[in-house]
Length: 123
Image (cartoon, rainbow, N blue to C red; front, side, top):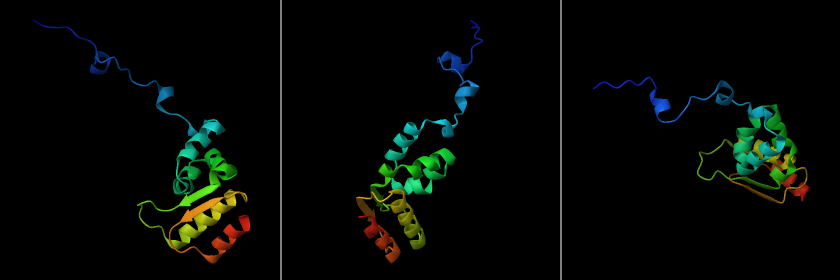
């Protein structure tokens, strides 16, 4: 007994291939509040090393929102170590982005005196 089936396996399961407009999205076009929601869920190292480098709107959102930088945590949390110059430059940038509103700061390793001075100037 032969069965005639002209449907593909994906339509058999009720799935359809994504429409072209659904397949890709421009993350740069997300509203600012949506970008900030994502950024608030990320760690500061992730923001500085990745999310802020996605595109211009994401970089501006990460740079221009002092609330993101009030409590800065640059501890590694099990990640591989970062070169000392990198942690110092990231620490300086994080404190600057806090726009004088940094209330708490955590980091591992030896911070340069300039970073410690910058932190003391913001309190």
